[in-house]
Image (cartoon, rainbow, N blue to C red; front, side, top):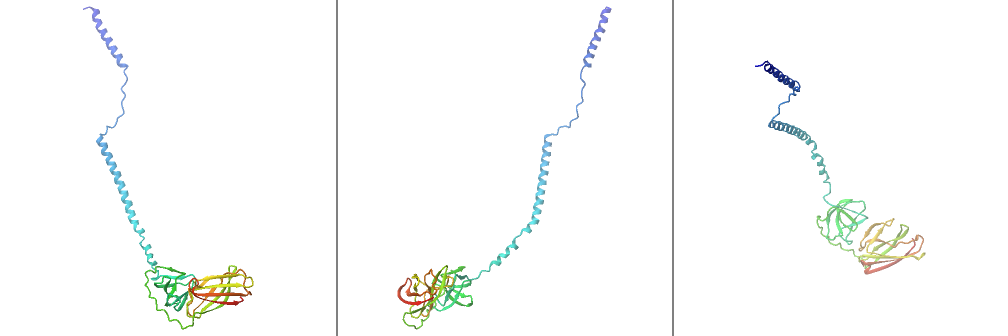
Length: 300
């Protein structure tokens, strides 16, 4: 072995070691990573979520139960039964219907003017209706001034409050025996002058002095000063008050009965004027059947 070969071995070794050293000195340093919590298994996460939901449901249920309990304690304050009991106080209606009239109306012992006059029901008065009749234009009432007395009221201008259909039917009493009087006749007199909204009407009184019932009448009046003339017909016997309103009315005039009638409206004041009036009375409506006439002269 030569010296050159022996030296070459160490030199090559050194070269290799140098290269190895150079290769390691340039490598980057290892940086430590932050510590991470270990991953939670999926089944554990699901269990925790379910537990949280159950807790929330429990809290909501507890709150609802608490609210219901509070409402339950308040409920008795809203019982309205005591405030409804006053309804019983409204049972104040009479066991009978009542009637009132718009003007004075005769009340008789029977359903027609052939019966005796018992009393008069006036506007503003209220009478108790206690019976009904087969005559639909009459009803049986108690007189307000004396409830012990009952009579038959003409219903033409009456206003009924209540149901009369369930009232008992009252039998028509026997017709009264007419008074013994002479043949058909009547008398007439001038009563007064009535001012009616700027016009004037003449009022007359008719008295049946015979045995025949008068059902209709007519008045023909002539002002001799102005020559103004009016004729009116009636199927009743109206009684006008001082303002020309109807104070009372008679359907007819029976034997011995008196009633009133009126002329047409005159434009001039009749005071001091000479008048002639002719009054007809007839035994049927419409100025029919037996009729009589009388003429009178007068100065209002």
